[in-house]
Length: 122
Image 1 (cartoon, rainbow, N blue to C red):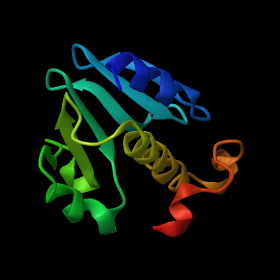
Image 2 (image 1 turned 30 degrees about the horizontal axis):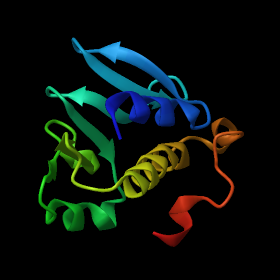
Image 3 (image 1 turned 120 degrees about the vertical axis):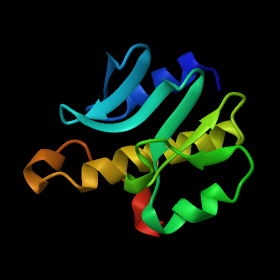
Image 4 (image 1 turned 90 degrees about the vertical axis):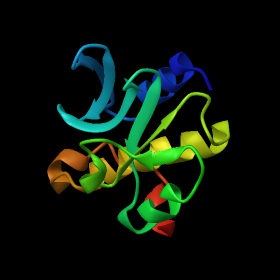
């Protein structure tokens, strides 16, 4: 996936929006300011949140490392070319979005939770 394809995919998720922050970082968030992905992170990188139980497993994979400043919140980062296929990347971005949505108050989750929530099998 190219950076533009990743951006387009992220913006298709319910309630997602894009902002430019910290110079040239393309930040994707939901519910105002709850980030779920950062594109052009530290150059041409990508960072996003993963499930806490899977965090260390992803770090064992080549090309994936803890996201600087965000690792304590279970964020991983990678540089292009991405060390995983398009389908897996889309799935992880969707999971990141849903992890953030799940932490919102129930009233703010309305319309943001996807059918067949991908977190059900984590």
